[in-house]
Image 1 (tube, rainbow, N blue to C red):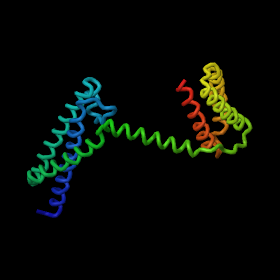
Image 2 (image 1 turned 60 degrees about the horizontal axis):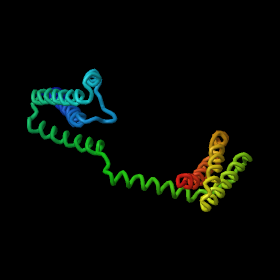
Image 3 (image 1 turned 180 degrees about the vertical axis):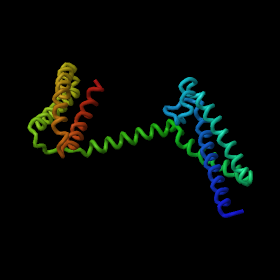
Image 4 (image 1 turned 135 degrees about the horizontal axis):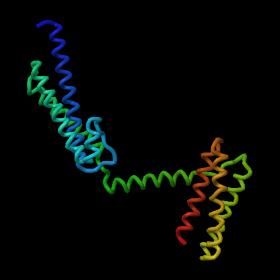
Length: 217
């Protein structure tokens, strides 16, 4: 056997392994598509199948396509002197690898994990707002806005402590005006300055306190 023939045989075996590897991916992915997903990996050849038969048709198509690739790869590998046991071992490893990848990618978090995630995010938000301090701004309208916002918070805290529903309703109107077009204009003006982030954080801190009073009405 010449060196050229040996190189060609090795190349063909590598191609067979590559096809088997892709076939394993189709099979492992396809096996999960019997249940609905938010997104799918769809080979172009199976787009019409998915359009007509949905995720179930896609799942069957992926399994069939993967199996055909593996069979073709096996025939090719064996034709070039490959040992079936070697091919099977490679195939098992490939399916296991893609199985682990598919499982970790599609694994849905438990209720506890979801709850813990939101608690952590809430704590991060709380820490960020707690640390926020009123920035020094070179914008008269922004400073006036923050003055009014702080005054509104003080008035709402007083009305809440006195259980003064009428005053709270009146302050609610002030809140709507203050956080409407006025805030939008300021955000647009400050968005290009280096104080924008500090303004947003401090504004969120005061609004968070106000919203807690409003929700408890």
